[in-house]
Image (cartoon, rainbow, N blue to C red; front, side, top):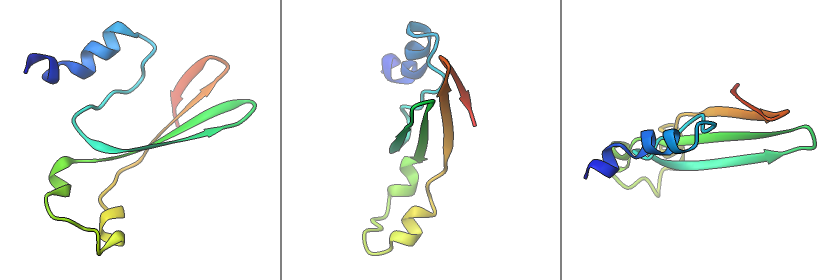
Length: 80
């Protein structure tokens, strides 16, 4: 159980360039790859938000996701 609780910190300590880790939430990540930069848009959702199936209400489901964006440019990752 300790590994699960400390998983994000373990990832970040093992790879110091890792800017973001959140293994406690579900979601998806979209990558936009361009010549000059890569942008990652993270769409996490708290597991509690998924207690009730929302297959028949996509708008309600989409409204429960949050968004964070990161860009990799010239070897530097920054939240944008």
